[in-house]
Length: 368
Ligand code: ADP
Ligand code: GN1
Ligand code: MG
Image (cartoon, rainbow, N blue to C red; front, side, top):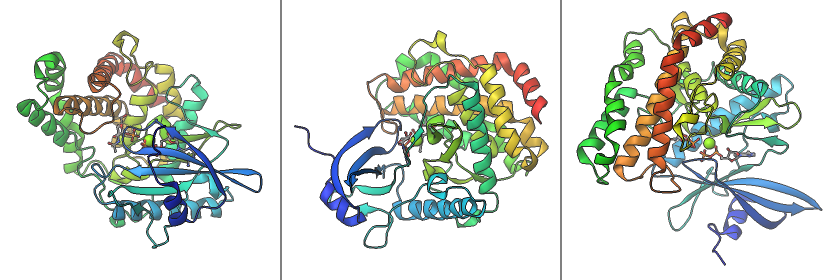
C-alpha cells in the first residue's frame, strides 16, 4: 500500500480538526502546490478540508506568504458580510495552527496549510459554456474591485518580477546559454519564435516606467481553475489560489484569463492544430470583466486589453520553454516533454491571437 503523503494525526492535532477522519482525495489541477481534500465525518455529516503542501522552492517565505493571504481574505470576508453575501463561500478560510501560525512545518521542512472546503461548487479546466466564461470575467473583475482599497504596501512580493516579461525573457536567454538539460538542439524552432517576439516583452514594462499604467492589487494567476463556480447559479463565487496576489497590472489578470480560458484546446494539447483563440469566448469574458471593472480602468488599460492576452500567452510560453531547457525544475510535469508541449500550445495561441487582433480590438471597444 502507498504511504500517505502526510501524517493525518499530526495535521488533525495541529489544526484542531474535528470529527473522524475517513480518507483523502488528491486534486491535480495545479502546477505548483500539492492539494489534498481531507474527508471527516461528524454527527453523521461529512466535513471536508483542503490540505495543501506549499511549494517552498517557489514560495520561499511561507510566513509572509500566509500573512498576505490572511489579510486579503479578511478584507474580502468583511466586504461580503457588509453586503449580505455568504462570507463562508465568498473567500477562503484558513485554519490557524496551535502555535498561532497559519501553516505547519513538519520535521522534513514541508509546510502545510489547511482551509475549509467549499461545497456545491465546480472548477473547470476548459470552458464549453459562454455564460460560465462571462461569469469568470465578472468574478475576476469583482475580485479586483474588492481589493481596490486594500493597502498594497502591506503586501509582500511572494515571487519577485513575477510578470516582468523583460526579466522572464532574460531567464530564457540564460537557460539557452546554460542548456542545463542538453535539450537546446531539439527546441530551435521554439527558441527562434521566442527570440523574434522579444519586442513584445518590453511593451508593458515600458508603459509602467513611463507612469502610464497603474499598479493595482491583482491576482496574477487568473486561470479558470482558480475560480469556484456555484453548482446552481454557475456564478464565480470564490477566487482561490491567492499565493500570487501582489501589486500588478489589471492587464496581467485579464490577459492570463484569456490565455487559459479562451483557448479552444487545453494548455497541454499535443495537437497544436486544435489550438486557437475562440472569439466568442473572448467576447464573453470581455463583457463579464468590463461589466465590473470598466469604471475603474484607465483608457490606457482598456487599450491594451487585447495585447495583454497575447503577451501573457507569450510569457507563459517562454516560462514553459525555460523550464524545459532547465530540466523541469519549476512546473510539475507528468512526462518528459510536458513543458515543451505546453510551450508549443502557448506559441500557437500567440500566432492565432496575432491573426485575430483586429477582431479582438473591435470586440473590446464594444464594451468599453
Ligand atoms: P495550485 O496552487 O496548485 O494551483 P489551488 O489552490 O488552485 O492549487 O487548488 C487546486 C484545486 O483544488 C483547485 O483548482 C480546486 O479544484 C480545488 N480547491 C482548492 N481550494 C478549494 C476549496 N476551498 N473548496 C473546494 N475546492 C477547492
Ligand atoms: C501555475 O499554480 P497554478 O497551476 O494555478 C503558475 C502560473 C502559470 C500556470 C500555467 C506560482 O499556476 O503562473 O501561469 O501555472 N503559478 C506560479 O498553467 O508560478
Ligand atoms: Mg490553482
